[in-house]
Every structure is written in structure tokens, then in C-alpha cells.
Amino acid sequence: MAVANTERVGARPKTPLDVPVVEFNDVTKVYDGGSVAVQSASMRIGRGEFVFLVGPTGCGKSTCIRLLMKELEPSRGEVSIAGRPLSEVPRSRVPYLRRNIGVVFQDYKLLPHRTVYDNVAYSLQVIGESRKEIRRKVPDILRLVGLSTKLHNFPNELSGGEQQRVSVARAFVNHPPLLLADEPTGNLDPETSIGIMQLIYRINRTGTTVIVATHDKEMVDKMRRRVIELREGRIVRDELSGLYRPDESTTEFAVRLRGELGIGAEGHPN
Amino acid sequence: MRWGFFLREALRGLRRSSAPALAALLTVLLTAVVLGVFIPIVQATTGTANEVRSRVVVDVYIKESASATEQADLRTAIEKTANVKSVEYISKQEALARARDKNPKAFEEGAELLGSNPLPASFRVTPEDPDKLDQVVTRLNAGGEPQLAAIDEVRDREEDTDKILSATGLVKALTAGLAVLLVVASIALIANTIRLSVFARRREVEVMKLVGATNWFIRWPFVIEGIIVGFFGGLLAVLLLGVVKTTFVDPLSDRFALLAAPDTIDFPLLVVVLMFACITVSALGSGITLRRFLRV
Image (cartoon, rainbow over all chains, first blue to last red; front, side, top):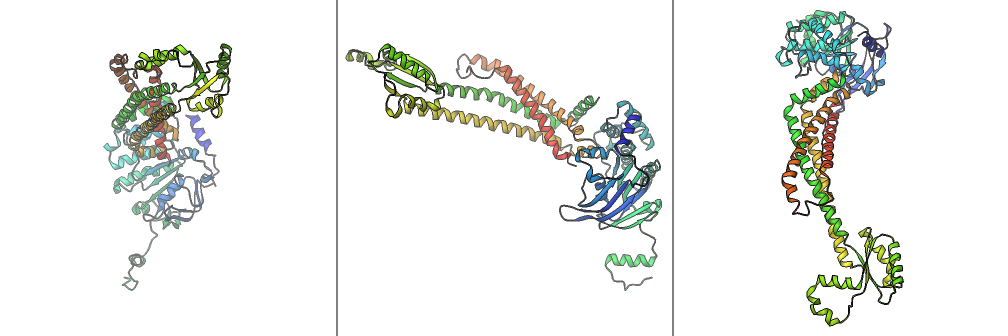
């Protein structure tokens, strides 16, 4: 166990505190069709931070997540993780990169024909963990996410919230230094969402850097963490403890809404 | 631990997608049976064609006046010529006997009519390669002139030779073409069936990649699945062929020359070839079709 752990840390050189876990340096991503997903985005996210990426659909949040997983290559600029530019990671090493990144998706992405236990165990089997360790770790993590009674259920026998808990457990069972969540509460009701965010927050408290892409306004407003807002691929706001939208008076609200709806500003400002 | 894991994963995959796996197994089985029947047929056909080709010969007629030493010299000279496989001496009496066998009626009175035997002694030359018969002919008979003293005439029966060569050549080319087509069709069919079964699980492959599985970690179970499917498909095909062979073909082979053709493949060798082909194609098929889904 100890050996496996040092190995994992060794693969990712121990970074001094001032090296950001995630760094976007003037990143632009243009898809083959010509649509621009991310434009000249630069940001630095430090170790242990909890960051919301917010913005309407199509603003480039998911593209940022996929760039971080090296599922996509930036058209220009450089994405670095722990000081290491991803462009220097050869294709054959990408799986090892991903083992250091936990991911949670809106649609859970569980293996449908495996039990809850096997789903979580798979990400340990992938890194060659021994069976003994797997038997020890999987029930532990499932207890943490509150699913210790559903070890042998299949994903389709679980509610959406429970499936997302499995997905969080799978993402965190390796204790990766970075956790990415792409709309983790997108399919869930508010009450369940709170449970999931609580879980993610708890993971963040153990020192894991967490990036959550979401358009769940309420959640962002309640959590009051760092918010990076994207709009049409550009970073338009980066606040250390922000709201989904910065505070605005009712007047500002009305002006903005009219602007967005394309109605002239001549109406009553109230 | 690791191989045990891969094997368990493969068995799990087979159990879960048993319908596509069964389809792949049936495809392997059927193509193997067809190949197993076709390989001996191709061999028997080419064997027969080659046998016919070996009948292409050149006759070198010896001058009546040639002495025994001259004949012996001629024989060694012919034997030394390039592309000559064997030389057979046919004496005057033998030539007459053969002619009589071929056409008994003509000789009922003919021999008496002629008084003496008009047929010359000859050497029958069988070439190494029937296609290069010309070489032999030109060496012995350049420009229609016999090159050696004892030769009266060199005859290559040009028309017969051409007919034999073109007919057997066509047969060989046809069977070779058919064999290639059949092999290509078998591989395409098996690969396609496997594709379907892999395709049904592409979402899973995607998830595996996202949690950091290396390509080979994902691929091995699929390859092992392919090996298992190929093994059982091939095994069933071989059993089926064995049954058909012992119950139908063997009893008949006494009566039909083609079935008993001597230079067809031995059954044990056929079994090995078929099993090897089934397993390889099936395993490679699984491994290669995955490649598309591994590019995440």
C-alpha cells in the first residue's frame, strides 16, 4: 500500500506550494468544425482550492474539463497540471495522467453491467492494486459516500443521486490530487444535489483540488467559493468568493434582462 | 493475478454479451467448415492439373542409321540439357506396341501390309517445367535443324502442349482466385461479427479510458474473448469435418479418384491449420476493432 502510494506521488513530482495544480496559459480551443469553444483563457488554480466554473451551456466549461483530461488538445496555448505542460505528456502516458485525476460526470458514466462494488473496484484494478487492498478500500469509500448497503446492486437499480455517489466514490477511491466534476448535479433534484456537493466539499477538505463545472446557480451562491465565469469561451470573471452572478440591484437586473432579450432600454427602470 | 483478472473479465464479457459472442462463434464455425472442405478440393484440383501437365513431353526421334554408341551419346546429351527432368527410351518394338494399343483396328492388317515396322526408336523427354518446354526444344532443334547427329526429328506436339498448358493454367488460377476470395470473405465476416459485439460495449470502453485504464488493460480481455470464441468455433468445425470425413468421404474414396487424391492435406495438419487460423483471426479481430474506440 505504502509502496503504491509513493509510486503515485512519485509519478507526479512533488510540487512546491506556489506551483498551481492547474494552469491555463492563453488557451484557445477551436473544434474541427470551426466553432470556438475556449478563447484565450488564462487561469491558475492552486493546491487545495475549490473552484466553480460557471456559465451558460456552450460557454466552454466542458471543453475546459476535457482539455484537463487530455481528451482534447488545445489549438493554441498550454494547459499544465502540477507545473507539467500536458502537451509534453505522450499519448501512451495519458492513462497514467488520468489516474491522478478523479472525474465525475452529469450522466455518471458507470459501467452498467457491474455492481456498485465492481464499478469502484475497477479504477483500483486499473492501477494494479492487489485484491486485498481492493477489498479493504472499496467498502471504506462506499461507506464514506453512504452506500454501504448497496454494494451488490447494479447501477440501474439505484436512484440518480445514488449513482452519482458511486461515481464520486470511484473518482476518489485512488485519492487523486485533482477532482474534476462536469455538471455533477445536472440531473439531480436540489436536495440530492446538496448531498453530492457536500460530498465533493468533504473531498476538497482532505486537500484535493476540486474544479466543478456547473450552471446550478443556487449551489454556487450558497457555497461562496472561488468562481470563474466563462462566456462564449472567454473568462469574464474570476472571484475568490463569488456568486453565480455578482450582486446586482433590481435596476441592473432589469437592464441586463432587457439587453439579453433584445428589448430597448426605454422601458421603466423601476 | 493480472492474467487471472483478464481471464475473468473475458468470461464476464462472454457471459454478458452471449448473443453476439454466439453469433461470432457460429460465423467462425461456418467459415472454418467451408475452408476445411475447400482446402482439400483446391489441392485435389491443382494436383490433377499438375498431373495433366506432367504429360507434356518432347519426342526425339532417332535416326535409323544411328549406332548404339551414338544413341547412348544422344541420351547423355539430352539428359544434360537444361530443364530436362527425365528421358525415356522407346524402342521400335515398343513404339509399335503403343501405336497398336492406341488404335488396334488400324493394325489388324496394317502391320502385315507394311511388312516391316516403320516406326523409329525415340527418346521421350519430360521437362522440369512444362511452361519452359521451348528451352528444351530450341536446344535440341534450333531453327528446325536437329543439333545432334543421331537426331532424325524433334517433335513437341505443339498444339496438345498449348492446350494442356492453357487449360490447366486456367483451372489453377481459378481455384487460387476462389481460395483467396474465400479467405478474404471469411476474415471480413468474422471481423464484422466481432465488431458488432465490441460495438455494443463501446460506452464501457470509453468509461474505462476515463478512469485511466491503459489500452492493453482494456484490450486483453477482448483478445482473450476472441481466442475463446475462435477456439470453440474451430473445435466444433473440426469435429464436424471429422464426422463428415469418416462417415461419408472415407468410404467413398475407394471409388472416386478425386477424393483419394494423394497429395491433399493430411487431416491432422488440416485440423492444426484451421484451429490456428480461427484463433488468430478471431483474436486479432477483437483486438483490432477495439482500436477505434480506444482513441479517447
